[in-house]
Length: 468
Image (tube, rainbow, N blue to C red; front, side, top):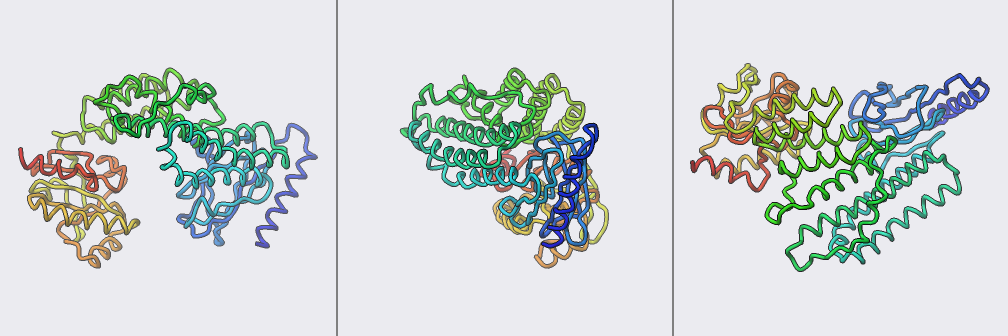
């Protein structure tokens, strides 16, 4: 604590001395702090998804960024998890976070801390409200709005008292107000979604037109907010809902469908006026669709629309690569012959270990709960479908640690492998989630390239192939 106070005082003294500089001299801005229970050696500073700097932790798990020529606004601090914070030029901001309870433990001291502690308080209020909302979404619109307005007023009271006491800049006030308003708007969009899903039941409510008046105040092109989660999240929920307009009753709420995602991209292209925001949203939607789609022709259609709309060169390159990999995983394609390491430390190509209809599943020693759950699920499915081989592929790079887990857990060594080149293989097989599985026939031809062993439909896929 003494060292931290000394550091704050030293920085503050330096910043105060900057007042004597001439106007052409840039203010230095500091961001430092301590990571309790660190999960890596570095922390990262980003602005609008662009990496500004990285710095290593010292032996006391402390760090310090020094930068200049920054603009006032939102920045992102990242250490495995991430959180947004606000900086003014000349701030000397100190933070402390425990990775075991990241958001709840994050606190700020130093110049600029008051602004950021307010944003954290508003963020945590929203997290607390999430538990209340499911029962509120069942209410009639009038009573739902009453509940929601009451929650919003709590935040407004905190915010207004902060403004009176601290007199923040107009730039910061715009961001703090956006945090309150767009969380409020998001909950209204969720209510609309939840209500529509009950359309054919007695619990459905007709929503009056004045319920939607908040939509007239949406800013579809804010450069200040384009990477701010409350704003970004709201826009996705909004476009998700308006893309559903005109959907027929049979296909309502097929949110993974080509038609829905295609329409959503079209609407974003029409309404979102900020190029960077539009590009990020369209990339997000396209990437998610490609990862879940099993039809090559549909992947090609969404890719072509993406290339018409998105103007970011890096995005275009990344999505093209993802589309190519995803298309190679569509049913009827031959699975990529990636190299694997066997339990006796030999290199084997994937094709050589496939002799029967096979389910490939993936696990890591970094998530022991998932490791246990996925192997338990595999044992259950194997007992029902003995015609299939279930092959586990470990996505870590430490051979000895992997083998230690296999031996302690009693897994069958002839059905456990490890990627030889983790990053390359994950890219080729599009391993984007730990629950992903790939089903192939005895020749390595893909039956389902994007399965999930915990999905209720997995047995339909397994049984469907056997019944052909």
